[in-house]
Image (cartoon, rainbow, N blue to C red; front, side, top):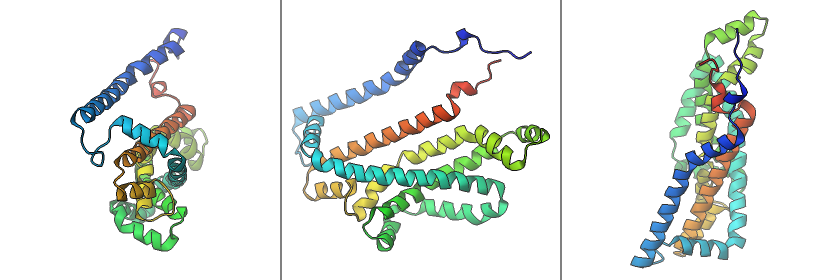
Length: 272
């Protein structure tokens, strides 16, 4: 007989909240400790502000320059998100195609691997020539560099699906295409989201670097101006903005994962 979960097995909101606090408080405590030690060290040793700035100096500089920092951040955020979404769609499609076709695997996977090994500084000038200083060039660069982990994890996730899942579905009359979409991709979804999460971790850094090499607006131009004027607090401010945007994107990916396929705990066998 099949066994269902009882009410006692379902985590309550309060239990989930305590579990979340228990998981994340060490991170928050470590970050707070680093900021405190950093601030105290700068206050005690008084290094040149052009060498390193304290957290308080960075915060003051961020507030003072926010009217110009915000538009630059918005441009980089838009480029990063657009490139990331394009990479997600194309990456999953390519991963499925390469998994299903040996010809596609032989033709495209080596090219994707080669593209991943190219340093950004070597291809950014080409995109600058092709697309000029417009944001579309940065979107394409972000999509190209975010593509590889999504393709690889889609391939690996589909390859790891047990064969009997497909056999059962097709025995019940399902077509190969229906089985791929409704069975294989669902089983592989957790691993695909792993690739999406890896790609999300560096899309804004990629966009800012591409802007630094040539753009009209964005955090890359902001960083270039701050570096040229020896404004170290502004360099740190832009860096922290990139970190915050990356964290928000990772939270968004996690939220989509929870909404579409649920928590990792939901994948566990209740009979265990």
